[in-house]
Amino acid sequence: MAGDAAKGAKLFKTRCATCHSVNEGANATGPSLYKIFNRVSGQVPGYAYTAANKNSGLTWDEETLDKYLVKPTALVPGTKMVFAGFKKQKDRDDMIAYLKTV
Image 1 (cartoon, rainbow, N blue to C red):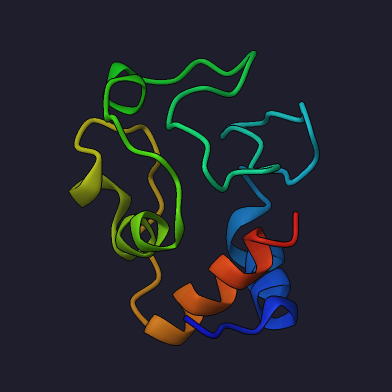
Image 2 (tube, rainbow, N blue to C red):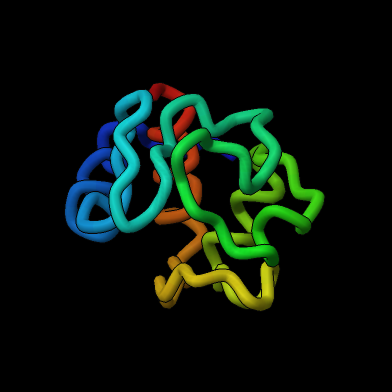
């Protein structure tokens, strides 16, 4: 995956920042995505996850995030994330590149 982190940052601002932060400990409607890589799903302190996320057994890496960002409810049925997903591979690659920087 060779995404563009700058383009991913713009996508994050327009499509994700309403619910998520990339700042440590700054949970909002969704959990902080600070240092998301290699983190087990459902583990950000202070965020009230669904049982689906807590018990998913997922570890966030490029492959898992790519699948999740297509349609979150398909990978984690029962998640409360209402995001429709990024249909374009390029958008997912850019978002993943950006998330690697935070």
